[in-house]
Image 1: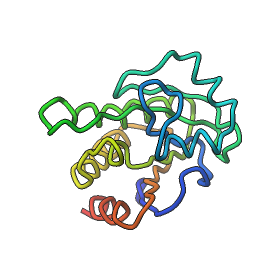
Image 2 (image 1 turned 90 degrees about the vertical axis):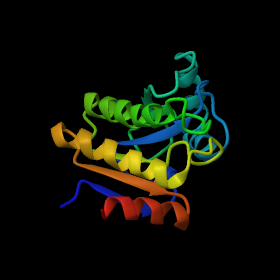
Image 3 (image 1 turned 90 degrees about the horizontal axis):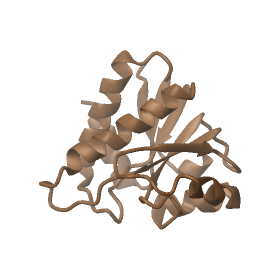
Length: 168
């Protein structure tokens, strides 16, 4: 059985130990998946994120899941795409790797990710999917806590890109 899969759906509805939020560096909510997670989790999330005073791109922070079905929310700011020559690939890989590390440290057996940086941050989807799948698979080779990682894709195009990478 593969420990990595892709589904199409709404990450705020997924029942896992931890969902990952494609946050901005302030961690105070925004558009896209970040705004949806903040709205669904409720006002307690904003207060919990305030104490971090932000988070650098590629790093990750963890909070309670509040009103979500997940126990935790792991927040990671992915990179804004600036053409590909500004360390974007490594920063994106770090977002996935550092999120998985926090999940492992908090004994999370199931983790769900959105497609980090492919919305308003304009990271090319196919490239992002390849980096995400490679990074997750590399992490899972040595991890003994996480049983399953799910890529939760908001639309059919994103789902197809991740499914293609997973099937390689």
